[in-house]
Image (tube, rainbow, N blue to C red; front, side, top):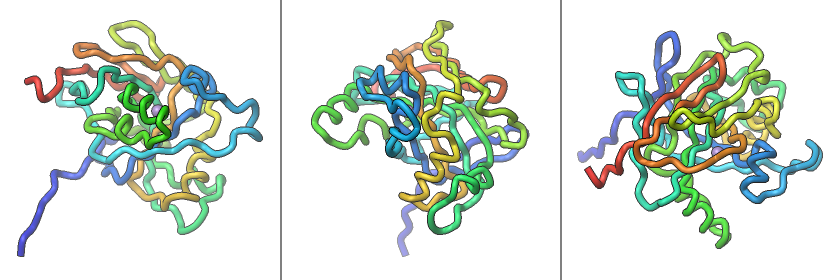
Length: 243
Ligand code: MN
């Protein structure tokens, strides 16, 4: 008998103790109107006009968590000259969804907790794919493309929709947005996703970014926060191939 063994499964620490095994990473595109506009897309004028969310996935081993020093170290990825930050709320599911469509009223029961993460993007490759009508995968789904804070259990988070996302790079504010401005909220997104995939315990959902996305360079220090809930600090390190 021959066995091919894979590396340890991706895990995220839980605030207060414990670990969260990552099953899948779903991501939502264009979930803040101001970011949709800066990307050249038209934002819906009202909920009735919002149509369907944009979804894509990252591999679960794209997760990067803090080292023993509390820092997330992200190597600059290959194949790009335009690595971009997108600060996002991340929703962590603690239970399998029932088979079939998940109603909005049942969504919160699946939520284990929340984190703040970066949907790192090879913007040049994404732009090229968009222009050619090709899939975004190589622009979005790559090694170390999903740095994330620890997960804060939902029972410790009140008034989520009153909170804001911020990202500072080298001490300067780059992104700031209110979760009340999400076009599709958590209940909406889980309802929509459930029509396309069976949601499972261990799934993470990156909920989309506010305006202000921009480039990251080797040596940059970033600090992302979901105010009062979670923080993520780290650096962009030289490419692995150059070491
Ligand atoms: Mn994003």
